[in-house]
Length: 306
Image (cartoon, rainbow, N blue to C red; front, side, top):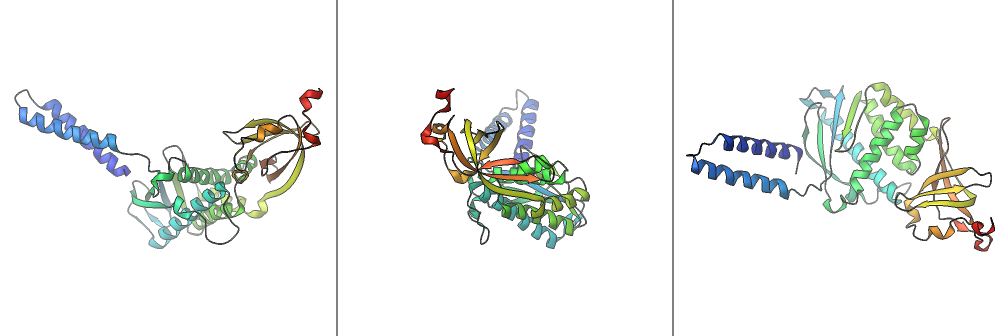
C-alpha cells in the first residue's frame, strides 16, 4: 500500500471513530453504518501485506521549483541514475556483477514510481517484485547505496573503506555517476526508507562524494595470506584470522564464496586464505575474504600441540 493510501486510510479510520463517539443512543442506524464502515477500514488495514519495500527520493536545488515541480530532463536522468546505482549495488552484493555488459538480475531490483513526495519535490518508490523483498534484495541495495553516499560525503577514510570493501568497482562507479549528475545540475537529494534517511546538506558534500568515489582514491589489492583461522560467524559471514606476526585481521566473506558450513573445519589449523584489501587515503586496511581457508600441514590442529 502506498504512503498516501495509508495516510488516507488512517485519516478515514480516525474520522469514522470520531463520528461513532458523537453518535447518540437513538442514532441506531447511523451507529450501525459507522461500525460497518470502521470494520471494513480496519480489515483493509490488517490485510495490507506491507511487504513492498518503499523508499522516497527527493531533490532540491537548481532543477527544483519548491514543492511545485522539477525539471523533466533532470528528473528522468536522476531516477535512471538512481535505479542503475541500486541495481549495480544489489548485483555486486550477490557477486554476479561483470565489468561490462547489461546489469544482471535487474528485474529483481526494479522499483515503481508510485507517487510524488511531499516537501521538496521528489518521488515515492516501491519495489516491483514482492517475492524478493523478504530476502532484503531491494532494501539492502538501497541501504548500501545510502551508506556509500553518506561515507563518501564525509572525510572519514575508514568509513568509506568499510562501505566499499565488499562492492565491485562497477557498483561504486554507478553510485558516483548518480552523485556526479547531482553536481552537474546543482542539485541535492535525500534518500529515505523506513529505517534510514540520508541527505546531502550542501553542494560541497556532493563534490566531495564525486571525488572520493574516484577509482584512484580507493586502493585495492588481492593476496593470499598464511595464518590460523580463529573465529567464524556464519550468520554475519565474518572471519577472524591470525597472521604469523600475531596480528588478527577481521573481515566479511564475499558472497561469491558460497555457504560457510564447512569453514569451521579449518579452525585453529594452519591455513592459507585469499583476501581482497581496500584502503582509502590514510585509513586502515579493510579485508574481504574472497576464498575459504585451505588447511596446510596435513591439517595439524595447533590446539593439540600447545
